[in-house]
Image (cartoon, rainbow, N blue to C red; front, top):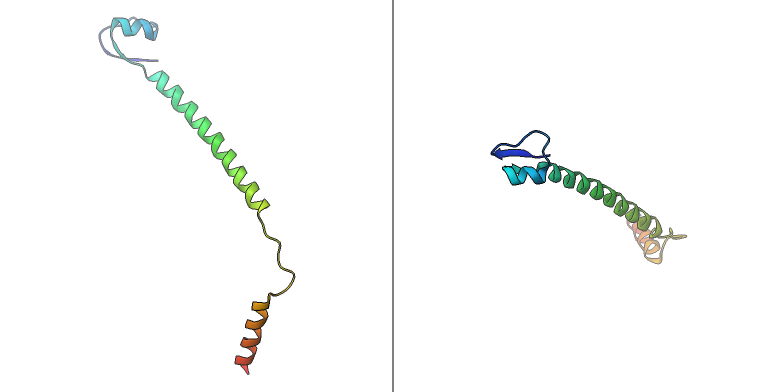
Length: 83
């Protein structure tokens, strides 16, 4: 696909021949490249998103069985302050 900027080109002429006959702007190639970029970017986005989700699930720490020594001490202090 192209747009003739200066000169005359017969309808149905290929881009290569049109470039020889007149000044043309080949916009079809740009559109194709833009669509390909969007497709690849979208696929890469989903791959990275899935990898991050897998990392997050893998890195979940196990919940502690009971309160830590620091939590016990803080609980005792809180109870003493209430009295």
